[in-house]
Length: 361
Image (tube, rainbow, N blue to C red; front, side):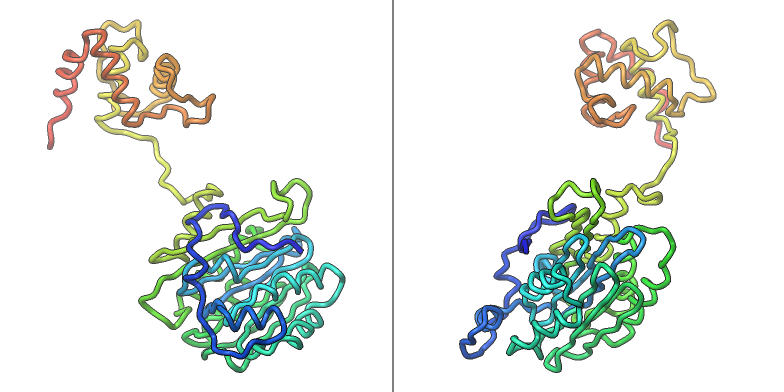
């Protein structure tokens, strides 16, 4: 079973030192690798999460947030076409790798989790949620986890949390995920929405600490992922004042979900100033001796976009053909326009005309 302890984020912040995530636990040296890991430096994630699948696409995913840095490095574990695991509280990464390996062999989630717990002397400090690609699930919340702690399950998901403000957090997560079933929304979107809802009602009971969030999805369908492990989205925010909101912002921006930015046709005196510059440089209505203001003078029209594109080509700036947005006018474009006008000896005349329309009112 492949491990991904240092995932490359799809989008998001870089990874902090794993030492920042650890808490030394006093225990005698046990025999198993998992218990030995816990005795040395067991990363503790008091957190809440949801692990789920989409029965229509076959995707599996996990979303999680906690008041520790870089939660995405340890809690979520996925395998395309197999299932997803969230391992938290006294977090053992072996629960992720081992359970997914057993699921891949055809072992049920209940039996896979039972086997792992049976060999773990620190099982009462663990919290684990498992969802198989076929929808079967299993969960465990140890008696040694910090209250409020608990778990609940529903169609195609499991949600679990510890050191929460109360059971209302998981109730909100469940309500959100069940409410988006059959909506056509992508699994990643639904997972983020569920975590947003749980966070909004209180989430992690601690305040004033570093907080992180992560949302990961794997897709078994051919051609859906560029990675051999089938991961199609790995959104990680290692530290942020509002990581849940940041996960949402990044998802909406990268997926270009309508509403993530304000859409408009630009209008204003700066557009007229641009037209004056382009005209003097020979790119906007070059056959017109003098540019006259009309009813569309302040409107950023397609004619203006075409003139900007032509200027950028002539100046060897990036163009739509090389991936830049059509009609891009940034500070570099403005500076290059002024340079072109200075070379042509027209800059002073253009500035004089611009001043007529630059009065602060």
